[in-house]
Amino acid sequence: MITVGIVGGTGYTGVELLRLLALHPGVEVALITSRSEAGRPVAELFPSLRGHCDLAFEDPDDQRLAGCDLVFFATPNAVAMDSVGHLLEQGVKVVDLSADFRLQEREVWEHWYGTTHTAPDLIREAVYGLPEINREQIRGARLVANPGCYATAIQLGFLPMIEAGVVDPSRLIADGKSGASGGGRQARMGMLLGEAGESFRAYAASGHRHGPEIEQGLRMMQARSAPQVTFVPHLVPMVRGIEATLYAEITDEAADFQAIYEDRFRDEPFVDVMPWGSLPETRSVRGENTCRMALHRQPGQNRIIVSSVTDNLVKGAAGQAIQNMNLMCGFDEREGLKAPALLP
Image 1 (cartoon, helix red, strand yellow):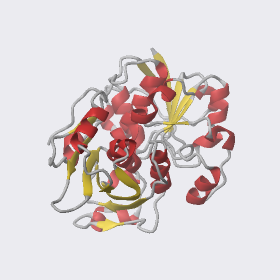
Image 2 (cartoon, rainbow, N blue to C red):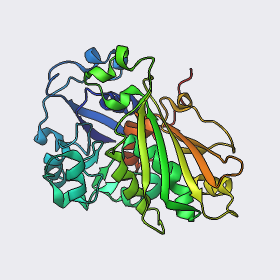
Image 3 (spheres, rainbow, N blue to C red):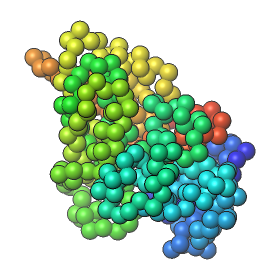
Image 4 (cartoon, rainbow, N blue to C red):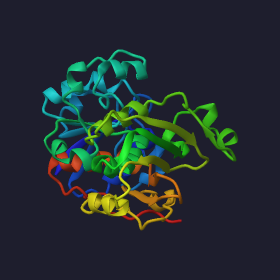
C-alpha cells in the first residue's frame, strides 16, 4: 500500500484522479489540496465521490506532501516546478500532469509558456510519461512528466509508422478535435454553452503548445529525418474526448500498415488497433484508459490516414498518470484502470 497526495484537486483532472484511485487496491489518498476550497469536504464539491472520499481540501504544505510516497500535480502550468525539487529531496516520487517538465529544451519551454523555468536542473531528469515508448525509464523514475492530451493521441497514432520508417516524418499532418473539458474547469466566455454549443471551430492554428511536445516525441521514435507536424486543434461541443485524424505520406509502398500497427501494439494493454477501415468513436473510450485507432487509405493516393481516439481526462491525463504511477511503484500497469468505457 502506498500513500499519495494530489496538488490541485478542484479541476476536472483532479476529480478524475480521485475517481480512478478510489478503486485502486494499492493506494490510499492521504491529502488533496486547494487554496480556494481549503476546509471544504471533497464530496461536497464533487457529490459523485460521496462514499468514496472522506477527505477535505487543504492548503498546499510541502511538509505534509513530503509524507506521501508519490504526489500528483494537477495544477496549472508553472506551479509544480516550484515544489517538485523539495519533494524529490525528501524521497517522494512525482507525476506532474502540467507541462512543466514535458519539453527537454528550457528555451523552447519558456517561449511557449511565457515565463522563466525555475527548476531547469530537473528538466533533463524528468522522464516523458508515454509508457508505450518509455516504459522501462518510467519504472526507475523519480519524476515523470505526464504527456498532454492531444500529444498522447497523436504520438500513439503516428508511432508505428515512424518507428518502421515507412512514411516521410517531415510531412505529417494532425487534425485534432477535443471536448470542452480539455480546456479546464475555470470559467471562460468561449467555453460557455451559449458560445461553444451548436458550433465547431479551430483554435491556435498559428501554433499550439502541444506542437513542440509532439515533435519532440517523434524524435524519440527513431525518425530518420527531422520530424515536422502541422497540427491544428479544434473545439467540438461535447464534454469528453479527443479524435485526431492523422495524415502521412507513404515512402514504402510494400509496407503492410495494418500488420505494422497490430505488431507494434500487440502487447500494449491500453492501445486498441481496430480492423482496417473502422471508424473509432470518442464515446467508445469514455472513462477508459485506452487509445483506440484505425487505418485508412483513399484510392489513388500515397497517404495513410489514422483515426486515433482517447478520453482526454483518462488516457489523456489522469488515467495515464495512474498508469505511470503503477510503473513507478511496482504495481501491475493495469491496476485501477481495468473498467470498460461508459456507453452510451
